[in-house]
Length: 88
Image 1: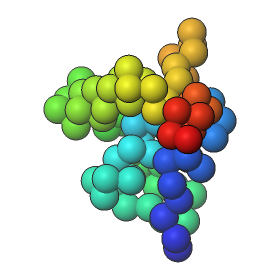
Image 2 (image 1 turned 120 degrees about the vertical axis):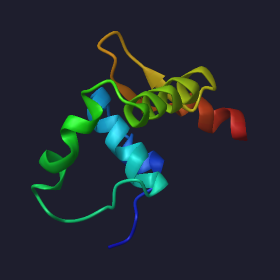
Image 3 (image 1 turned 30 degrees about the vertical axis):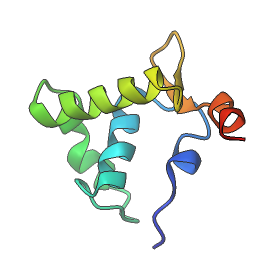
């Protein structure tokens, strides 16, 4: 299975726990896979206060501050189209 890019994973608004899961997968902390139950196996990691979830949340917030991602009022994240415009 080919690993998707952050642009693909965050093309639409993503809930915070799934956003952390995407980042963890991209970093190799959690493997990508086709198993339907894989998300259920690790979802609790993102909903508790622990060093991994805090680090992943901080990465999402830094990506937002840097303009890579956008965050809406519901704390969902998506790829920032403005970031693409600033690269040109």
